Amino acid sequence: MCLHMQRSEFPRIFGTSTHYSFGLRFSAGLHRGLRLATTALVCLLFAPATVFSDPAADARDRQANLDEVFSELESRIRRVTLPNGLRVILMRQAYAPTVACYMKFKAGSADETDASSGIAHMLEHMLFKGTPRVGTRDYGREKKYLDQAVSFADKMDRWRRTLREATAAGDQEGIAAAKKKVAWYSKQLRIIQRQVRPLVIEEEDSYLYSIHGQRGYNAYTSADLTNYQIELPSNRLEVWARLESDRMRNSVLRSFYTERSVVTEERRMRVENAPRRQLFEKFVGEIYGDHPYGRPVIGPMLSIQFLNYKQAMDFYNTYYAPNNAVIALVGDIDFDESERLIRRYFGEMQRRSIPRPAEPEVERRRVRVVLREEGSPSLAMAWFKPPLPDPADLNLDLLSDVIAGGQTTRLYKRLVTEEQLAVNVGAYSGYPGERYTNLFLIEVTPRPGIDEAGVAKIESIVQAELDAIVKDGVTDAELERVRNSSRADFIYRLRANGYLADVLSYYESVTGDYKNLFEYNSRIEKITSRDIQESAGRFLKGEHRMTAVLLPPVPAENEGASQSDGENKNAAPEKDAQTSQ
Image (cartoon, rainbow, N blue to C red; front, side, top):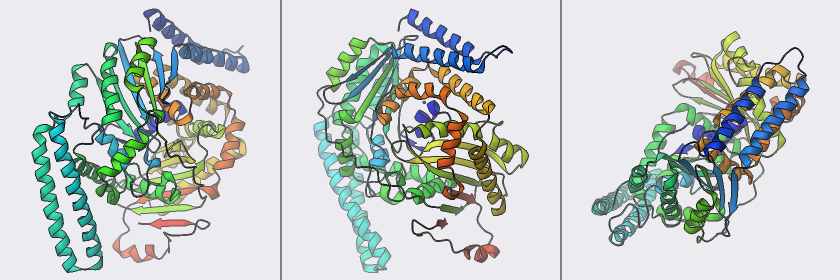
């Protein structure tokens, strides 16, 4: 998966979205200049070489043209940092009278604790519930009900915990008493929710945006950050500034406990009833343990069921700060007017102290997770790798496309076309996030009916192909194919305001400088087979491979033999960590 696609789209593949849509994402004269520059660049980059061409000279020409386009793009960007630390990226691109508005907070599941796991995603849901100005008919009256609801819900949760403890202890008297209390507080909470309903205007923010011509009003949460996005007519930018500054400063998290039930059902549907997602969640948890990336973005079911209003407000008041946010506005905008609006609506917010502990060391160990569930079989293999901006990150990103970026690649041909052991194969670099040490991941969908011997053969073939790259590197043809695909994908996306707003804000948030987007794409031309070979040799060794397998349940007559393998779920770090479910 090419770098410029992966950085913005990975949250959609492996993260969560409030509105459930996933997906690893100027003047007419200036627009005409970009269109001509883009067309010329595509022609220069992808025109067939003649028998008289010099490969080295061709590469230099392509790099020069790519750098020229990047320079032209940067000439239409203004970066502003407000005194309160809010970073703003403004990009003028006026082929249509619209603007894409993306706002990212460096607040994801990696910033949670075990006790609050899932709160970043829960808060993303809650920030669509309004403020004292939006979503209410009379906030003064409504607040009394909201405070009562929180009080009743807290008491209900305490008794729910008591019920769990009594059930675990087999205390029948305690169970009966706790059930009675839970039922009473639950009834009171429902009464309060029913009484407050006439005071609430559901989805008023969506309505306000809709009457002003919105498109793509959405959000997503990942391990690294939370993003809010929308596209509007350019002359409605002040509508966005008023609503989003209000959301950032004054959200009241109304209907928190109703929404908690919604998120519980979301997890049940998307994880509990989805074996592949269960596999990845167990796999990542086993790999990372207590590391910030060891917690699932949506949170474990037990954690979600007990998330509370105070936890959400604490997270909101800590991380939704101007010095922890990046705004990107891309479209038909005036720099001075846009900056004036940002300063007017966001400038008075106060910076806060953001807790950012140093990354704990990851423990390199062999991990093997086996999940027995009905459904399509799945095999995942992972290796630790460094995050941005380590040069190995980009080398391995290109390698992921070399080995599994289409039907002509090494792994697809071996596993799907020739051996017919699988129906699909993909490779990803940067999972589950890119702030800390992350994973180079290869996922294979074995053919239906495959057994453990077949899975072992797939693993052997994958490692053999990686070892061959460590020994001999990749071919010039493979590298050129990936370069061409990477350039084409990036260039053809440049006219999409939403794409540019997303990736510019992503690079600014995660790497500290949006210019790294252009630098990394520019570096693709300079990467050699030797670079990829060295990175593969450092990080993709067989002894460092971690594996997760999803297979159908073992037939009853074979169950005893299967369980005799003695897999140990709690192995010490220096030993194999194996889990069988």
